[in-house]
Length: 103
Image (cartoon, rainbow, N blue to C red; front, side, top):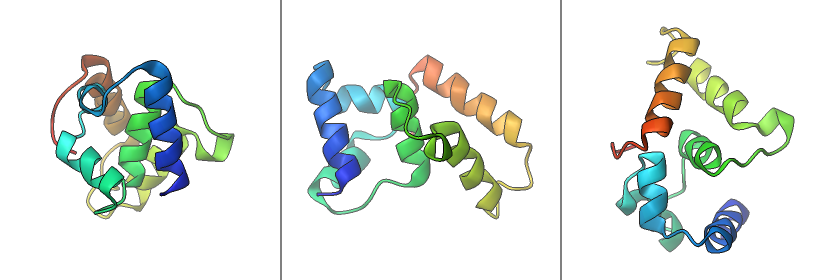
């Protein structure tokens, strides 16, 4: 299993959270999260950032969720034309609402 997923599984157990609760906290679908743990697909950088932000995890500075998210936005051909701060504000608003939109 991917080391990041192992860490996530451990974090969920330590916090007494179910994967369905993680889905509500992040706005990532339960189906997507299930696929990660079954090895069907890997979480995207954005998904990892949303999970880390929702759980309050702070990896090393260069891998901090905000830095990774900003890099993902800058490198994405359709997102790079938008203001990064506006996109970050939308992501933070979504996380604070605990949105259930598909990611």
